[in-house]
Length: 272
Image (cartoon, rainbow, N blue to C red; front, top):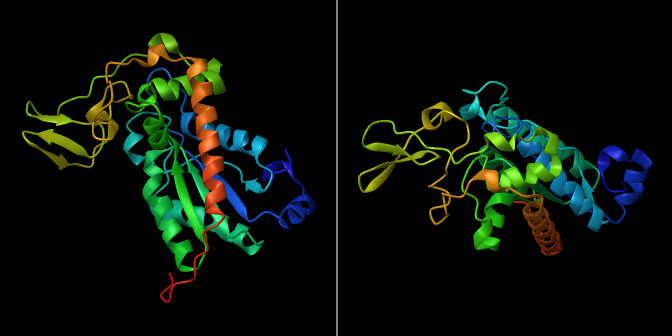
């Protein structure tokens, strides 16, 4: 495809850069997703969305997907790969710097893994100080607000399962998909899916490994999505649902890019 970097020659990229100033860096993770989904779920999703965007937009360059992110808390389950945030930040920064050196002025991280959010924001801060416009889109958070029935419920949920049925159907074990049960740390301390744990009237933050929260790998994220219907099973996933979500997410991103192009920052006095 003419705007997917890995498919282009250097001369084609040089020609494209005459009119293209926006680059998308898809980023994901290689981590466990319960008993029914492949470890590549996150990076395959980011890659798929980016490809669909490339089919509709000519003046955006799509870089190769970064397949490994910060997923230390998932390493209780075999196969998960993780990179420390400091190293990951340098890696993202290096990709961005390469693009900037060729004339790219706007960089959008298309993110499919919650553990990458802090690193992306750190890189965006660094780029902002240099006058480069950068942002991160976390697709699952946006989709959850588009329609009530699309509200995600957690790691390995019906939405991720639907997308994998569309993207990588041979690697989905739908017969093993079920609503997970979050564990308790004590009789009175309930895990909520992320750092917060519920104790009486309030929440207390822990650094939890996924084995502290779940025996199966998939979890309910009560802290992220307090109004979701947590009885919805990933076993109800469908390709139709995935196609609708994909179309909505791709259109949203394309509309955002048009506004994104209009933003021009000045370098700050204090640069990283």
